[in-house]
Length: 310
Image (tube, rainbow, N blue to C red):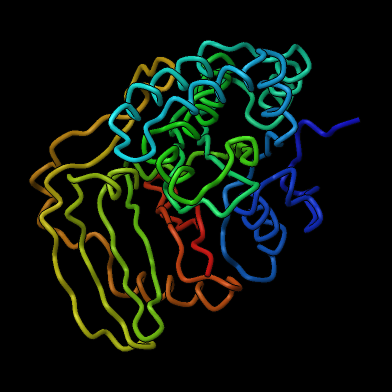
């Protein structure tokens, strides 16, 4: 019997084909939290078995393959149109009853009363670059969650993802995806950022609100550069916009960009004392070149939410 759901506390290193490396790493770090002291939002993983079942249930394999074979691999001029058709096929598909039942039970068990969750991709089958697939924040209710999972699946067929398959000679049939469902960190009223190590210096970037803005052209974060624990440079970003919750979210339209309030725009988002605590996390995360973090504005606690692997 294939496992459709893996709770973070039940994951083992042998589960990587079921969970993808990203989800596996975070789940194992969650188990180590009492030792490392690094808070990880709890949750569960929708395994790759669900992706395979979804593709088979909707008879999508041949349809997707036929579309992908029409791409002009020399110019890629028709790639946006082909990619859009692929994503529509996936988003219009339906989950098998077994997946719907397992997802509904896991969500009700871990996040009763339609709690807000983060829905994060965890691709497997090939070394996809970070940021190639989509994740969704502030998702509420099982219907919205089910659709967000489909959107994660569909993000394997963005223009950028397909171009990567073409240039790297990767078969789409070799790619699969697990999806993490985690407790939301209320960084919409807090801070989000990254910490990366380049072999010499550690660079911390931070901004007000949800971290998804860091991957857009609107990102103008604060920057702190450290060598070991010594602060070398501190640059205040403009932080003109921030990403926050949509109050009455519908489906995956659950976050929004807004102008950063003047009273916090000119403040440095990451105090030096808190930045130094983040620096202490990196050596505890094996085989990592960096992390994504978020500070909950309700509890004032920092959480590790993603890892960059070597």
